[in-house]
Amino acid sequence: MSLERAIMAFAGMMILLSLALTLWVSHNFVWLTAFIGVNLTQSAYTGFCPAAIVFKKFGFKSEAQLATD
Image 1 (cartoon, helix red, strand yellow):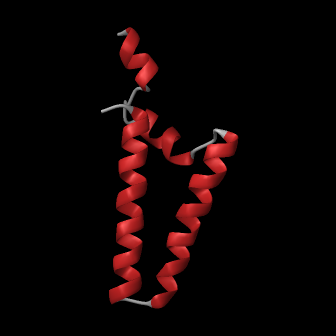
Image 2: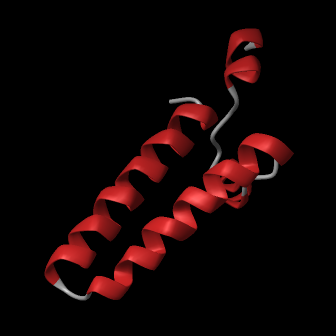
C-alpha cells in the first residue's frame, strides 16, 4: 500500500471512529471530526501532513517511490 493510500484510509477510519464516538459516547467528539477535516484541508494546501511523517517511519513509500522500485 502506498503512503498516499494509507493516509486516505487512516483519515477515513478516524472520521468514522469520531462519528461513532459522537453518536455513542459524547456529542463533544464532533470536535475530533472537525479537527480531522481542518487537518485534511491544511495538508491539501501546504503539503504538510503529520500522519505522513508517522507512516514513513513505519516504512510506507509514496506512489512515486513504488513506481521506481
